[in-house]
Image (cartoon, rainbow, N blue to C red; front, side, top):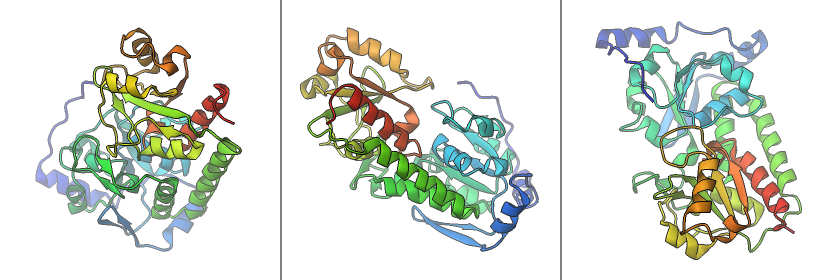
Amino acid sequence: MLRTPVLLRTPALLLASALLLTACGSAGDDAKSEQTSAAGYPVTLDNCGHKAILKSAPKRAVSLNQGTTEILLSLGLAGRMAGTATWTDPVMKGLEKADTSVPRLADNAPSFEKVLDAEPDFVTASFVSTLGKGGVATREQFEKLGVPTYVSPSDCSGKDNDSGGDGSRSKPLTLDALYGEIRDLARAFGVEERGEKVVADLKERVRKATDGLDASGVSLMYWFANSQSPYLAGCCGAPGAITRAVGAKNAFSDTHDEWPQINWETVADRDPDVIVLGDLTRKQQTAETAAAKIRFLETNPATRNLNAVKKKRYVLLSGQAMNPSIRTVEGIEKVAAGLRDFGLAK
């Protein structure tokens, strides 16, 4: 997608923006919430090897990935957000109205200057790469301007992001890591009670989705994108958490890479019982939508005879549900429902 050209700022203007950060706010939450969030600062979050120090509750937060955006919106913080960016899917159901009230800086990654134009007082991201070299900007660049940053712990705890591709995991991702992120962000904004309610609701959804479910012996394959050299889920990311929750097995549990690219001949050898398809709205890779993936699977000689393809055992998930995010719980619900519908769960 083409970006609107942005004029580069001079160092003086950058400094001016930084000085304005503490002066600019938004109407945001009701008076009671603002009074509550004023207490207990500064707040320090130990986060992915950095310390995020917030001297007061953020009033102009910018979220650089959809995952952290949807957490902030779920916490009722739209009024304290100055911008969002990098979307793979429509916003989570129930958050549509809140989302429309927050400026979208870019559908994909915005420039550093575009983010600074929003005059943020807190910047969040779902991925280490977003706030690393080659990303929007480094954490150090923001922090030099007095802007604390936060990265989803699920992308750094037990994960090596320097191993190539989308990184690899030495430890499986757990839902507790996702719940911890919600609690961290709730604490950053001084709305801890809201965070606990969101976590409790998610835990109850997982309980309901998996109650009495036994899918042992059923193999699942998760295909995110790309038809020529598909990105398939390894053992230990969000798809791994979904698979463990429903009691099934991942066809590629023998690789710790987050999203390894695996050839179709190997897929045919594994012959999964169910294929979980990323149904993306972005336009970066081939076969982004689920419909495009299904067309490929049912016409390609290497895949059309797969057990799952012949029996049309497809489960469609948003890209966010296949990444570590608040919507991983949505992934558990949909995969569990699919297994029951296919008659594969006891």
